[in-house]
Length: 102
Image (cartoon, rainbow, N blue to C red):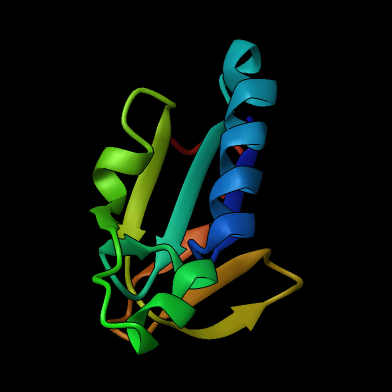
């Protein structure tokens, strides 16, 4: 089973996660989007704050709703490339599961 972690939920991270979810949907792949914040802020529009305009931001759960993506809130503290895993600051470990595990 394909286990894909996308680290960072900016425009590129969200787009990559959605594309991966679409491509792995039929094969039972799992896509998880990891981000320190639970909110998606339109950073491309940050210049609007200088003009006093509020920025739109959305809960990431809502952004990925219905896509099959699992949102994981957390900050990555380290990567283990050999094991294909990411360790979060709170101690959780995400990534490839050993063969035969669920």
